[in-house]
Length: 213
Ligand code: CDP
Image 1 (tube, rainbow, N blue to C red):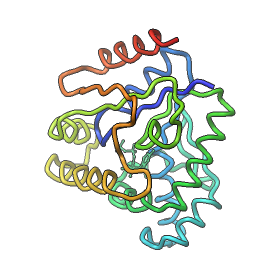
Image 2 (cartoon, protein in one colour; image 1 turned 45 degrees about the vertical axis):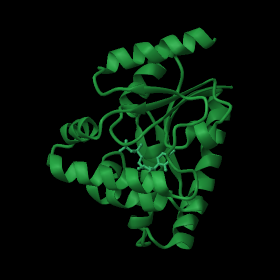
Image 3 (tube, rainbow, N blue to C red; image 1 turned 60 degrees about the vertical axis):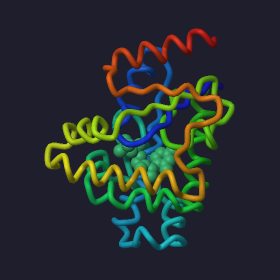
Image 4 (cartoon, rainbow, N blue to C red; image 1 turned 30 degrees about the vertical axis):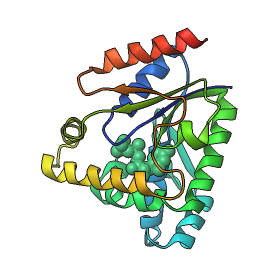
């Protein structure tokens, strides 16, 4: 099993880079952020308050979840668009801090990796906790203003100041939680994407993978 782990804060380019890198290396790709977003969506849909740790962990264990290139299905409902909305974005860090949720998602991620023989896996704790044995660990980062501008451009209904405030709040929560916080994993290569285009970042990481294989 060969895992390429990509971690980093909001808007650092993980998803776009991860997808293109996977295509280039002919590996499968897993967006673990979409999994935490899907748990948040499932809880809201069932009327469970995202701050209610026990019940939210039950939702995480019970829910039917599939995340792949074609989208995100939650309990038979297509949640691909809704998980990116501001309601889910504002509640997801609280759900992701829930140890019961994290344990369940890590188990599902390991099952996915075993079934696919590894792949490009992207998130916040992939190199540090989920897959510390990864063949390559990358920590993607960029200046906060650049990250906020990228995200504001992706979301048609959001203004820059609101997006910047939301991602700053999420980064603070993700970095300060007790269970598997966002960190630069030991042994990771840090890539600052502030002044780099997508193609250049993909090229750089593909080069690192080739060097190590
Ligand atoms: O918006 P962005 O693409 O940066 O976030 P995401 O990758 O969709 O992840 C959404 C949220 O899920 C993060 O803010 C974290 O709270 C959580 N997450 C996590 O805790 N662990 C992961 N491995 C991936 C995401």
